[in-house]
Length: 248
Image (cartoon, rainbow, N blue to C red; front, top):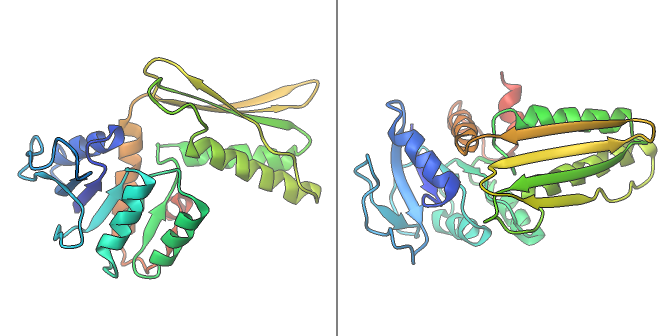
């Protein structure tokens, strides 16, 4: 499988590149970075590919593109590939509502799998949290996250996803709009990622925790999603991580 990486110089992008070039069953077709990156024109270690910016004229011959970049770069990529039916896996977060709508519109031309968190096991964690929220809607939820100190001090896409879906789950059961789920943000050292959800039941508390030890967890999950998306001739539409796991 030939894979192009958008955001190839980022934390997860670097891990993706390393996994691809070390796996004989995978081939790095493109390592895409921002036009101003110091890496443009330099070779990717362990590969014959050079880092380069994405543009409308690029010919990467990718079976699939994995995007861990920025909202701006992600939207520019969609413009660059136009109507081409190239499967795209998107792990970028922070899209505006308008950007998200544009992504959905692009899914008319190609299959895209979009998720806020590709780490292995996260989907099972998310489903268990939502199951508890439905069974115990009276529990007062709180979402917290801990990431490395270089990450912005604002809630991640993962925490916003969890908080929003918990609100929806509780609202559906209670029959009225649930209160907003608060999010607490921590930044500590080189922490890769800890996501926690607690439910205060008054006389008891339930707590769910999911911890990522290495960045390869995100990369491995994204590659697995890319393999699923690019196989079986998926029809052009928007897919979720749950869609890929349901086929197991």
